[in-house]
Image (cartoon, rainbow, N blue to C red; front, side):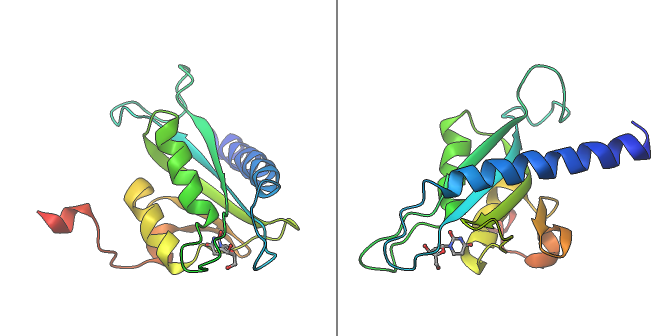
Amino acid sequence: MTQDETAAQHSANVDSLTAAARSAALGAYRPYSGLGVGAAGLAVGPDADQPAGDSDGRVRIVVGCNVENASYGLTLCAECSLVSDLHRTGGGRLLEIVVVSHAGEPLAPCGRCRQLLHEHGGPSLVVHTARGAVPLGDLLPDAFGPGDLA
Ligand code: THU
């Protein structure tokens, strides 16, 4: 792939993920904060030894929305629901993610969700934020991860 093709693919991914995240935000259960959140991720797998973007259809979009709770603290963020969708649809790894409000504004994942995303995408997961594409490793440096349990 040329640099131009890579840039075009990148922007196509952002557009598709943003549209999917906005659509997911419509499903938010948000009686307490009023803030609807939608998350959409590009996922590959579950076979880690296969290159991303191959033609067998394993690259897919997974989505989630926030689901609030009267206890407040038990609220599920949109990213939690996205991780559930990742496993519901066969598992694998997250490559890129977009999180938006119901108004379509980009949102940064909260601290807890950065840890959750790290488990399923690692430090190279690309997070599309208001200031552009940022690797998760920059948003959660020196993360605790599965390797620390050895
Ligand atoms: N929220 C998310 O869905 N993801 C985040 O990363 C931050 C916060 C939700 C939780 C709650 O329903 C609402 O936003 C306000 O905090």
